[in-house]
Amino acid sequence: MLVRTVLAASAAALLVSASAASAQARDATPAAAPAAALEPCAEKALTVRATPSGQDNVLRLSVTNHTRHTCLVDRIPLVTYGHLDGAAVPFPLSGDAAYTLGAGKTAHAAVRSLSASGDRDARSVGYVVVAANPEHHGTKFSAVSLSEPGGLRVWEPVTTLWQPTRALADEVLAESDGGGVLKV
Image (cartoon, rainbow, N blue to C red; front, side, top):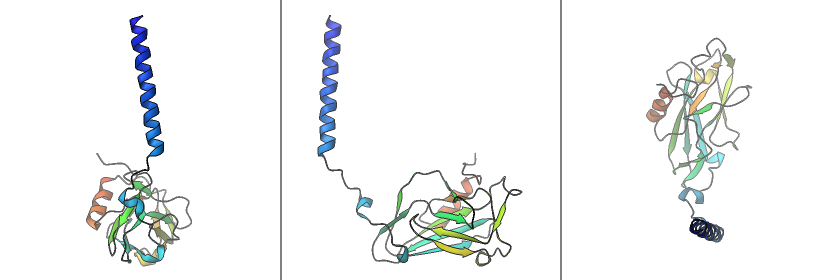
């Protein structure tokens, strides 16, 4: 009998505690994170660049905020190749999030267009489009402008997330095996 009473009292205490927590959650206004007050960067406020890296099948990307205000871009650069379906897979794998881009600041990423296993299955395209936010149209770069007059070879492309420096973007890309997997 004592066991039932203790169990019933414990269950009642849990219910009261859960109800109180639920009421607090409904009544409380969520604390605003610093990034929550920031607006997404307007496409016209940004300059997106893609340049050859000097390594086979690797491009360096950058996005510069030309405004006097900090704004947000997507954490993952959107990189699409020609008419092919899909975009480069982020490394490391990452959910949707924003990257804070300070006024006058530049973020960097690197993209590898060819996985280690894709050499024989690669397709060739005449351009790549890079956007800082999925809502943006992006900037189109021809294969010729990227020192690839025969076309950009693509198979399972991988991109880094935006990084504060070019060296860090290169380092992160070097950690992947080309298929979004960390080298061991």
